[in-house]
Length: 540
Image (cartoon, one colour):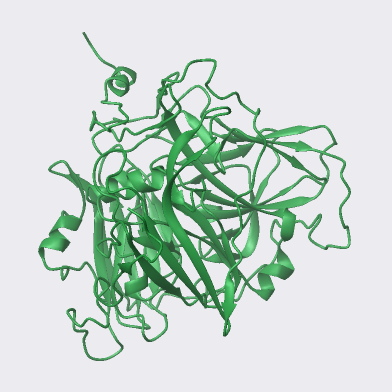
């Protein structure tokens, strides 16, 4: 019997206990009807659920510092209408609660691990919380080996000194990041500043939009299948934890903070009526100027802030947000749909100058430090190959286990504070794309060869994740201009989370401007500098 990729997918060890399965994709995008084992009666209908926003946490303020207390815990969520799905999430919410602060307001986030001893797909529930996009100290950056055991807690200190941006926090524990993020440990984190508040829609017109995909069992539990650690592609698309929801919108502009929180799937957005998507901010905040595109690709962990202008759309019109997909996803009958917007006649305040602002070409932040870094020709070039080696995903043929076995001393780069380097990332892995994340810094994409062969217009802003497509090589201008105490170990890895876990992750070390760093000094060691302590509220 000959098996095509659809057959391989069906035989791939799909289980609530998480079989390893067979590796897909093998080339172009696969397409099949479904993979969930829900009955047709329970399988969620498109555009039947109401759009919801995640809760926003109110901090306790003391001496100008915002204090949060969050618990990672087992809970249930009604993702499928009428069905309770077990989740493992921050405060039991999927997606997790949002933290929203002004630039210059530091925060302390107490993260309690009250999860079960063992995860639903095996392994343990030791967690490490990464605030993705923050220039955090190494011991608060969510270093993969800096884990908090069940029954313990850790206080994470965040400076929030950067310009306005959409960050997100998610689990980063070594070898279990994919399962933990998939089961619910992911949420947005917003930084505001005066420029962003003046230029972009705010309040009800500033909309967090966390997109993910999932596979469900006949009882509504999440199924996990990473296809020999190559990726998980679900047949149900979720927007803020709801399948294909509908949002009512007024006749004005809306800003959507779109986060691809899928553990492997990439997207290619398009509006059903052909209206443009006005990209106004990237991972690191405002672009120099807005750009209108008809569609664009979006990889795992990237954040794009997009303004959609409904001001000229007739009341009663439905506009769909569609997914055109990309090569080497696995697509199903309904993964081309994401959510819908129904235009209503509700009143709003037209004294707000953003209500019908045209953002295409609109000057937003031409003074952005990252985008104004220029090449001198003297930069050190760091070359990274992302590939599969001996069944493991690797960077330059090395894995995270190699880092661990070196006593966490093996590095791929050692930039000095204030130094500018060119990082060149080549994807020689065949039929796979890799969204690569560099911790600590924002960078500027300065070139792409092979594959699409160009830097997309939506990428012309400060970034911390870059989509490295099949056969592509990207070049990044990286200036390590961070506060003087940001020295030590930081990670670089693929954000296809099964790739990261098995084992496409390395580290670099930021050196002081002069001299060298003592790797074993507890004051800069990400594992030892701020150890977890027993949680005061944990009950076994």
